Image (cartoon, rainbow, N blue to C red):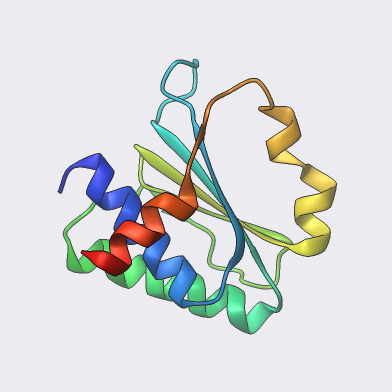
Length: 122
């Protein structure tokens, strides 16, 4: 699966699990290994667990590499690292505290709404 499809379908998985405030940061031109950060907010440990499990299931089903993922869903910040895409799932408190968007304020953003709308049409 190419990176654009992987990103779009992964965002759809997170959107279907009611993750909010989805953001994508393009990290290709940085020293970080990867192409995109995906940042999302969840409302509870149960939603965190459901979102991570759905994302992992999607990636495994499509034979995508998973380098690392947090197994403790009670944290304020969980990561699923696929190499080319690194998913950051936060509680509201964790997202405000770690503020990754502000840390990487100067990097380009990807239009998540456009990607999700194209998924609905396609």
